[in-house]
Image (cartoon, rainbow, N blue to C red; front, top):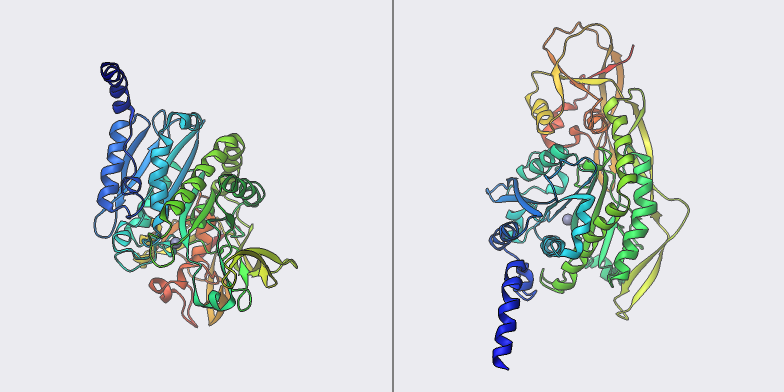
Length: 499
Ligand SMILES: [Zn+2]
């Protein structure tokens, strides 16, 4: 008998050893310890060494010079087969939101199982498990420069966000998802008597300048799909609903700002999402297995959706991006917006602090609609003065096409005068709201005084939102660029418009 067992082991063991991928550190540590940067680094390189499907690419560095990794999954050379759909998922911009990273590492291992191989017949997939390793090691939200990375995607001053956008620009992913956690345990909610309790919430793009067709596909097709996908796998889920509690603050869907990981890519007409898992209560370990598996399942669901709807998504993204790239000067761009009601209440699932049971609460002050308050006409482009190096640095960090300006007289050049600087409420924050008037630029422009930034590029709508003085999402709302807005002075960036 013993001889027979030995013989079987000899037959089975070699196959078993060679095909076995290493387990994610979280599993190795029995779900009781967060994965360190060092463990992550070893794990992803082990996966790379043992798989023909996965490659580790270093896409940049953190402030403290830790590496940022993208794991690329492709049956061919990544990004080369144009018939495939390119999907990017990135996690843990906020270092204290650990389940995104842990879920991503579980997913990396999961995707190497032979039964998941079919996905890569149609998908080239890139996974960045850890955007903020410095924050993660300290279990803190911000990076080592004390910056909130998820408010940095417009100005791109941080190496982590810069690396992500350079990577995105290289492949122009068609589908993206930014993975976070939400914390439902605030004191105001406790006073209210209920708190949010969904394992996973999912948000779509809400900025009015993102393609309407892409927003519709996200809201009408992806959301129902992913909520059911999660529910079928025993994870509770709901649409991403910040704000509240309902007795003291309104509930809306995501911000319409374009400085986060979802909307900064959405504004380039990418099918783009945010996924948030529920944080642990007292520490990041609580319920970690369920939280990480929930995040992994949500990411896996995104791949399933991209696989099933590949041709439709590719066609739509390509057509909507072509509109940006070909440039449509004169179309309306909304630069100030607000969240308003659609006359309906929201039925939101919450956990009762009194009974400890899940309940459904009716929210009366529910504002799901984003309404434009102020539009501008999209110009042909903008002129950036050469004596404003920070603006040129910004354009370079965003890899914008920018050339020295030669005035052929073909276009009209407009200048804004800042008459006064008021303020406007933006999702509870106060931002500058200048009163402006427009005049034709009176002085002849000498060649090489300005750089010309065309709006006929993939980031064309982003450029308008960044450079219009009345934009509540614009560069002038950031401390670094606050000097752009001065009462009784002209705005230094000029508009180039059709005559
Ligand atoms: Zn977050």
